[in-house]
Image 1 (tube, rainbow, N blue to C red):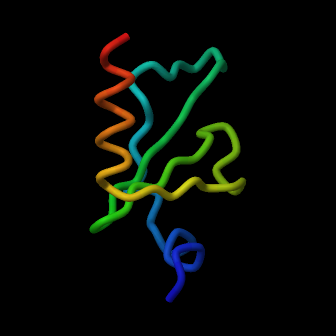
Image 2 (cartoon, rainbow, N blue to C red):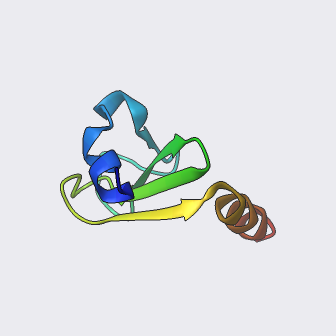
Length: 68
């Protein structure tokens, strides 16, 4: 099964919305962690494209973003 097919089978409960997201719109993302992969999507367009990155790549991104 390819990554795109796997993402389509994830239940909505697998997705976590950013704590920075609000009901007022703006930039909102959701992530779903799977073994070895983290999927990222726009919370306002849940049927839209999904970015899939390795767990290590996601950890590096989050670490960099946390530096400000």
